[in-house]
Length: 340
Image (cartoon, rainbow, N blue to C red; front, top):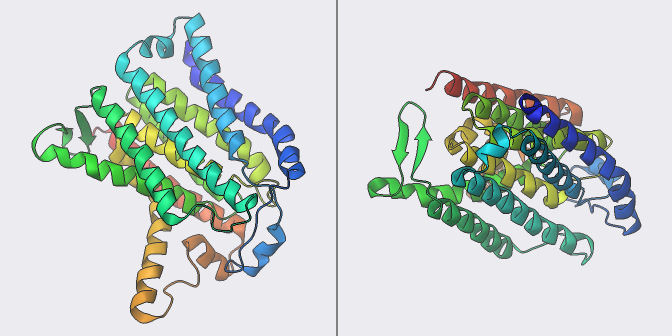
């Protein structure tokens, strides 16, 4: 059974996410937790007005339930996952990573709640959200440092000491890395199925990478995330019956970061998560270019809206961005396979 733990985790995550939709989506409709579509977005998105949001709760249920189920199965057979979690380093990285992702999810939930219930379209203020995200990110890094994270792996260089000398610069960079990627995933959530599809590609890549590195804990967690993304896509492909909201996108952001740190290859997320970075960069370029020239570099930012405005359908943009993610993920995976 042990060799099938990752498959079991993915299947459980898929079914829990799908089945939970039958309960959560009607409940969100009953509470009138519908998405408000801003006037600054594409006009045709107005037809999505009122679609239930905060569906990211389904992703959380899928991942957590699947991880518990996988551990239970492994414990019964005294498998690799259960044995690995007896190791302090594995255990702390798993709990800290899940805790960080759930805290990011909670921040997203607060943001969604304010938008939907309090009728403040922009949710938490930028300062409030930034403070909370940086606090959670810092707390996560402190736990990793205390638990004995002494080095990080950099392709073509190898393990680099991060507890003395120049290596200490890793920690402030890591803080901004976590903050940046969490928000980049959030920016990618703008079309039906986009964030889920891109994250599915990323999670499958980390599942293969962690398997190559003989890391059963994050191999299983990546499988949980992949299964949950597929399950959510059942409800979120166009026309979406539910949106994940910041509740889901912040959770996904926290999860991909947690997995990258869990296998001690955070730098690989730059390649594997290239689409997240491109989306975030498009926003920064748009803002900077407009301040300098009073003109827009893109028809609309993030970049997925630019392609929409150019005439591509939502499905075409999702396929294109997933393909670009696949390319970045393929290169990241090669670096693991060949030990770059």
